[in-house]
Length: 178
Image (cartoon, rainbow, N blue to C red; front, top):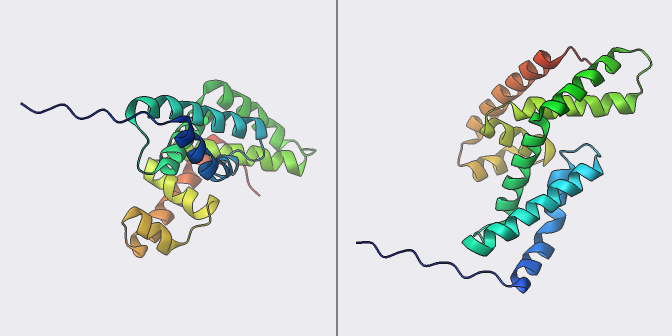
C-alpha cells in the first residue's frame, strides 16, 4: 500500500507577498499586451489570476515556477474572455463599423486587435504560445526553441504554420485588410 503524499505546507502571507512583488509587473505586462489598451480588462484578469493563485496555493502549495503558473492561468482567462458569445456578437457589430469610411484609425486598430485575439483563441495551444512568445513577448527563435524543447528550425516551421492558421481564422471572422 502506498503511503499518502505529504500535504504541502500552506504558504504564509509573507510568502505570497514576496511572490506577488516579484511577479506582478511581469504578469500585468503579459496580460496588458494582450488587451490592446483595455486597462479594465487587464486589471480584472490580473486580479482574478492572483485570487485563483492564493486559493490554489493555500491547498496545493506554491508551484515551482509561480510566474509560469500565473501566466498560464491569465492566458486561459483571456482566451475564455474572447470566446464568450456576447464578446463575439459585439465584435461582429464592430466589424460593420470598420467597413464604414469614417471609422477612426484608433478604433480600426482596436477592432483588428480584438479580431486577432479571437482568432488566436481558436488556435491549438502550442501555436498560440509560439505566436505570443514571438510577436507579443518579442522572444527570439533560439529562446523559444530552448523554452519549448524544439529545434530552431522546428520553431520556425511551426510559427509559419501558426501564422497561416491565424490568417485563415481571421479571414473566417470577416474581411478586414490594412
